[in-house]
Length: 309
Ligand code: FO1
Image 1 (cartoon, rainbow, N blue to C red):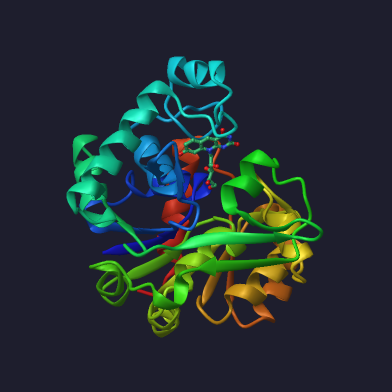
Image 2: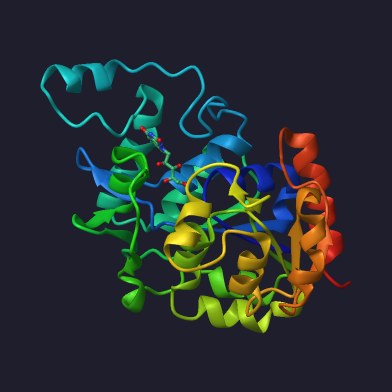
């Protein structure tokens, strides 16, 4: 059984590779929900939806989020009224949020609704929100105070410097059903190439989760989201620097040393392999840029081989 700690786009691509290498029924993804938001009265779970749509082959390849072949009639109608349109919700994507919101009103947990949605897309892997309780990533921007994650990431195009990140609700949040068992029972725990600060940390912030991953350290393999000092997508490199870390595979190694025994880095960083190992992790050098599902499958094989048998 493979357990994957997952954020958004990078994790979705990693999972799209893993399902080509091991049976999807063998895979459980523990997914960040700190990016979730309430908008237009709807509960939106971007990381869960990005993974679902990617594995269903329905993702918008141009953006890495939302559905392919979308129409935008609802957003155009909202625009007429001067309503909120900075967070783009396609007409079919809205169906997901309408369903999730209604089911939550019926009393279903986010885990239960997520299982219904993945089943409706014929996905055999298990997607677990890290918690069914409220958890929201809040970002402090000097001079502006706190922004919600999507206000930072989308509304401000993450082009503002950040001085602090916190995960509102983390202290009261409980791991969703199956989360701790999935980590404890995993033959391999994979830390997907997601943003360490705003995708992986909120997952680890739920009480009990970090401890479970630390206990599984020897069979945990992390994939660096930083290649040659930069993020492939999104603000991971800038966030690392702004929060006092090194935006390199060595900086990622320092962050992940307590939770993973192995770090997979790209060939572009091969010269830093010794520096990574000096941080106390085994270092595996391999192509980590998942340009297509075959590249993702090749990386999945490297990751699974990276864990001691
Ligand atoms: N990202 C954007 O940059 N602009 C958007 O308008 C936008 C809308 C959106 C709608 C649904 C969804 O599931 C994701 C969406 N994203 C958008 C991406 C989202 O902000 C990120 O995928 C995650 O929150 C970061 O991993």
